[in-house]
Each structure stands twice: as structure tokens, then as C-alpha cells.
Length: 262
Image (tube, rainbow, N blue to C red; front, side, top):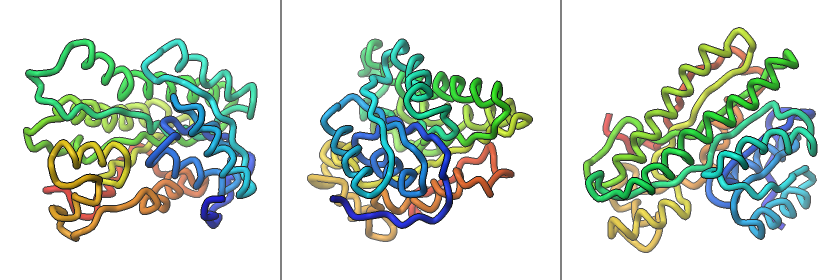
């Protein structure tokens, strides 16, 4: 059994969707929301990992429903909200976390990869947000949508990941525009922009950039000499989904431990 997470806010009766829940931030977000009482639909491509996460959440007294889904397949994305509603009830919280990185120079990318990255990182989150919002608006219920952007939306060193940075800047702007469009319906849309956080993705980045075998190698180049772990984002996530944060919408919260060059 995994380490239990203490409840801080009451999300009883809420239904959450977390994409990209098989590792890293998504896995942590799902556990945190379940610990607060939300029923959580966990999605990703790796069925075994989803089953493991479901077992951990249930062992801690929570509710989880795994859905194998590929965010590059718009048919699967389009059916996701419908499946969640049928199994758990109408989703009131969406965490748009799934995404992929490129680590490539713009001149070396293949068009097929470019299309895949933008589909997963931008089109799928937009579509999911729309599907959740449509249901909330029709039911006249408030909701919380949290998109996972990145500090890469605001800085780029020119050594690869230009398209990833572009997609995350688009996520930040999507957050702002949808917040305006849905504000009168009390559907809040916010985002978290993490810096380097320990995960499979940053493990790969560390190896490509030759700073180490895993994300901890970045501790050599960060101002505070450390690399945050996913649990460091718990408080930000809970702040944005807390029913008491009903006036907070259209905000992108940077959580980078002082890494960004401002």
C-alpha cells in the first residue's frame, strides 16, 4: 500500500477526471483528489499501471475508475467524458495533465510528430475541457478545470523543445480564454505551470541533456540545488479545485522553485 495522503478539503460528491495518470504528476494528482473524497476517473495508455493506481487509491479508502485512452485519438477523447458520466456521474473537475515533450530542434522535426504533439498537448485538452463544460453548463453546476502548462510557455533556451514550448504557451492562453467564456456559468478554468519536476519525462530530459541519469541530475543546475517532486504541487492543485476558490479563474500559477529566468 502506498503512503496515505491526508485530506485537506472536502470534495465529497465531486467527480474528477485526471489524464496522464499512469506516472508523474498525473498519478499524484489522482491520489490527492481521491484522498479529498472525489471519485476519480484515471486515464492513460498503460492498463497495468492504471490498475495498480486504482488498487492504491482503493486501499487508502478512495474511489477510482480506470479508463485506457490515447489522447492522440480524438474518437477516444470524445467518448471519455461520456464514459465517466455513465460510471461515476457527471464530472465536475478536470485535470488536463497528459502531454508529451519533443526535445528536438524545430528544423529536425517530422510533420507527423508535430501533428501528434499538438494533438495530445493542445487539441485533446481543449476538447475535454469543452465536453466537461458543456455538461456543467447544461446542468447549471459549477466546476473546476485545471490545465497543466509549463514554465516552458514563458522561456526557451534554443536547444530543443520549441514545439513543446509553443504548445504549453497555447495551453496558458487557452486557460485564459475559456475562463472568460465560461465565467458566467461558474466554470473556473486555471492552470499550473511547473518547472522541472521529477518524472519519467524529466528523467529522459536529463539523459538527453547529459546532466545525469535521471531528473535529480538537474539539481546541479537549479538555483536551490534541488528538484521538486510531484507532491510539491499538492497545495496548488487543492487551492484551484477547492470550492472556496470560486473567484479564482483564468489564472496560471507558476510552481518552479525559482528555476525560471524572469
